[in-house]
Amino acid sequence: MPSYRAEAIVLRTHKLGEADRIITLLTRERGKVRAVAKGVRRTKSKFGARLEPFSRVDLLVYEGKSLDIITQAESLNAYGQDLALDYTLWTAGQTMLETADRLTPEDSISAESQYLLLVGALRTLVTGEHASSLVLDAFLLRSLSMAGYSPTLSACVICGVAGTQPFFHVSTGGALCVEHRVPGSVAPRPESFELMQALMSGDWEVADASAGKDRNEVSGLVAAYVQWHLERGLRSLPLVDRQAT
Image (cartoon, rainbow, N blue to C red; front, top):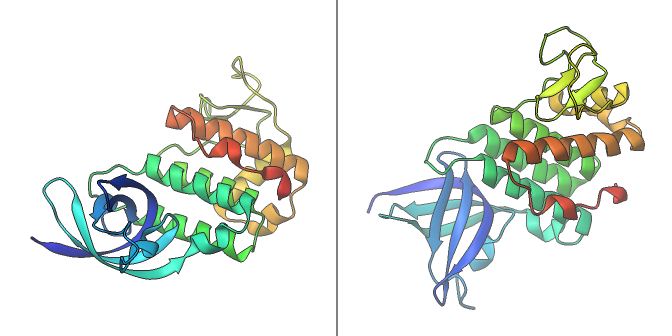
């Protein structure tokens, strides 16, 4: 059978038979891949612990007819060990994994940008460089943008008039001017629009200096926007403890 090497983040796992697992991976080279890890649930498994969610691994994989088969796994980073010590970080990380899983098609295409975004976000969660709520919202906004669902924040999404607008509407796709306001629009604070723009662009100086009330408002807008465009809710998102950050 032909084989290939892959650098990957483990997104999720589930049991197969008595001792095997199916591992869902976001790979740097091939997008999302589902592969079988044989015998990893046995206590004597050589690499079972390396194939847990949040693990960044270097793999040797054989191509199968229906599912590929993992034959080697070398650990590059075990982010789960640090995230498991903090409920807030763990739930934020779980939301990232679930989002990456939902937004990446399983058709063996490159998803390098999504992979690098996820690796960077998990690394930042572990180091504590920025508040976890900011890291999560930045990841969600950028991940959606890469998938083609970027919200319009600096102009009216309908008429294109530039500048900060007074309204935001999830299903319309972003900011709205007074003339084109639609039912169901909300009126975020201008500082909240500024924070969302900072998270999208990676302006952490602005993001880190933001007020708690603006972070809370942005988190609500981002959560609504993500779940609208994914068409069904993220199971892990309601569990995130944003008040702790």
